Amino acid sequence: MKLRAKWLQRLAGHAGRVGLLLLAGGAVVLLWQPTEAAWWAARLLGVAALLLISGTLFLRPAYGQRPWHRLFGWAALAALGGHVVVTTGFQPVFWRWLTPAMPLEIVAGIIALLAFLMVLLVQRSRTLRRRLGPFSSLSVHRTAGYLLIAAACTHITLVAGMAFSAAVGFLSGLAFLLVEGLLRERHVVRLAATLALFISAIAWLAIGSMAETRLAGLRQAPIDHARFLHTDHTGLACAGCHHNFVDRTGTENCLSCHKRLSVSEASRIDSMFHAFCSECHRADNRAGRKFGPIDDCNGCHGG
Ligand code: HEC
Ligand code: HEC
Ligand code: HEC
Ligand code: HEC
Image (cartoon, rainbow, N blue to C red; front, side, top):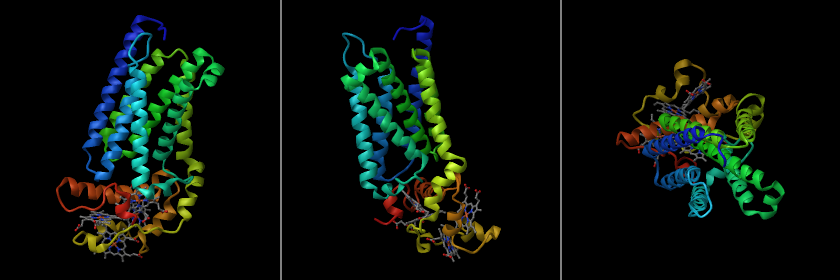
């Protein structure tokens, strides 16, 4: 791409490198969090896919150079494929999420997959490229690439919600990479509009009446009663979990009361209970005590 000025080029390069470093830092923090064996593969493959995709930004193809850009792209696709197969194949509960009430991290993950398809399609399909024209096809390829990075970072940040510093690393890394894109990109408006569309779509699904409509299905589904036994949890203070014993909000079951509360993304029953149950198990694991399932869906959802 032709650049408007030398100093802009230099600025874009610096911003991009800082962004990549921050992403790598976020990945290190994320990989530091304890989890089960099955999730290690999923995490490593997912993080590898994101770093490889971001790496392609620095290996822009030029005439007569080695095809690193393309090699990184294919390697990222392989890692992403592995990530999807490991998460959905070994954790069948995952499929229960694929309803309109799916969590936002899954929405972001699916958008990332679609953006990757777009990147590939524009690159591979001659007819499509001819139809888009030589310059606009390249710009669509690159815009989809930045959308892919933005969606993947959103996905990981939401999944890594418990690791605050990892989330900060991914979001600030993303911000620097997008600054790089906006400084370098010729079709700035198209890139900015695509990113704005992505953010508004996520916000639209997350808050207000749309969230309420989306989550109605989850609220009305019968209570699942994930595997929870008091005999696994002896010696803990009742009130540590039964906040309702203390604030006297009621004597009913946790889940039936919380199902009613699930009207927004922030109060949805699955994310609230996943955080509640897994945080304690994770802390026990860190402290070297006996612990329950952390991220392994099967550990709590039968199977
Ligand atoms: C680790 C958290 C935790 C601790 C500690 C705990 N509970 Fe529970 N308790 C739960 C959960 C979660 C449920 C709901 C399980 C379900 O419905 O599948 C529950 C359900 C119950 C129920 C059944 C409510 C109903 O209507 O279904 C009673 C009664 C109860 N607990 C009493 C106690 C008492 C008494 C103690 C202290 C000795 C205690 N619990 C300690 C988490 C806990
Ligand atoms: C009668 C209703 C009711 C019952 C029963 C109940 N809760 Fe709650 N719970 C609430 C309400 C209301 C809140 C506050 C929600 C908010 O802040 O958005 C809450 C908050 C929580 C939170 C904090 C969420 C956060 O973001 O900090 C956790 C965790 C939680 N409940 C777990 C449980 C568990 C575990 C049980 C059973 C052992 C239980 N609740 C029983 C109504 C209930
Ligand atoms: C306050 C800490 C704490 C909370 C909260 C907690 N757990 Fe546990 N959980 C433990 C500990 C400690 C063990 C290990 C007990 C043992 O092995 O003796 C355990 C074990 C388990 C096991 C047994 C694993 C196995 O291999 O047998 C399951 C299942 C489980 N927890 C589910 C849950 C669910 C579901 C919730 C949320 C409703 C929850 N736990 C909340 C501390 C907690
Ligand atoms: C530490 C235990 C634990 C782990 C691990 C866990 N869950 Fe859950 N999950 C729960 C609890 C507790 C609830 C609250 C309602 C219930 O009991 O079904 C829940 C609720 C859900 C719900 C909503 C059920 C409904 O209809 O209300 C879905 C879907 C779900 N989990 C999927 C998953 C997936 C996918 C994974 C793996 C990525 C997973 N869970 C890992 C404990 C767990």
